[in-house]
Figure 1 (cartoon, rainbow, N blue to C red):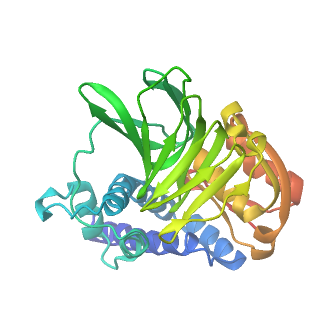
Figure 2: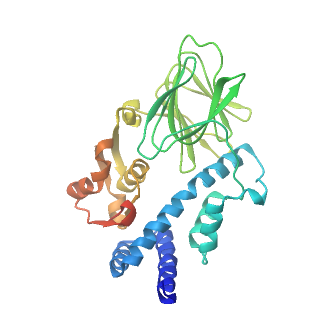
Figure 3: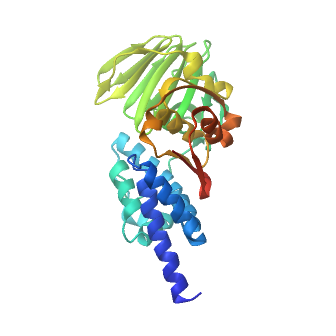
Length: 324
């Protein structure tokens, strides 16, 4: 490889990082999408560099989630020698620190990664049901990470680090099972079922059956069936009514959206598919929609949006799609 080839690759990677930051900033417009498409078409190096940059961005996620979990527990960062080489190499390669700056600013990513103990996880698009303890079943939605608490060889509780799960407590179980998310605890009676969610820094608890109480600090909030509370500030927001058949249709591998902005719909859909769908037209993103998708349609969802709303679709490397 010549020096000129190496220089071209490095410049392509620098530009790819800048494009990734722009497209995920939330302020990209249609002209940005068209310019990005022209940049990808201008050279095979550009498309390859963007795909590599996206993969390295994804590789940072375990570190981000660990740091977020540690901050919720009040842990101190681990010593500097605990940094994984993959993250160090990525930040060293980002001379402009563009992608790293966004990650640090948004999540407060510190140095050091530690063993987080036994856990349950699902990949993007994966769902699973697990009997975690006698009388306790957990349904994990896509891209979910749960840490398990044990005592004397038995699982006694869990912490939702990221994602979404439904917990069902058998009426015959007498021992308490503690569920944590952020700095809150979910206390439930035998026979209760409830959902916990922590996505994009927003956490909530929804009662499906029985009695559920959310404890945060010294305060306790009763959540009745078909009610949901969100964690906000240092407390718990007032309960709001939800339709479980719509909110938890994912348990039947269906996603239902009722009068929601298309931008919100796409943000949720991105949790179920590799890559990312980016809306570059603000008016399109603000459009209110009613939609129903099955998880088997995730690969074709951009085409379905095009057919229903006339959006222009541009397919990019790494399963990225621009809608305008």
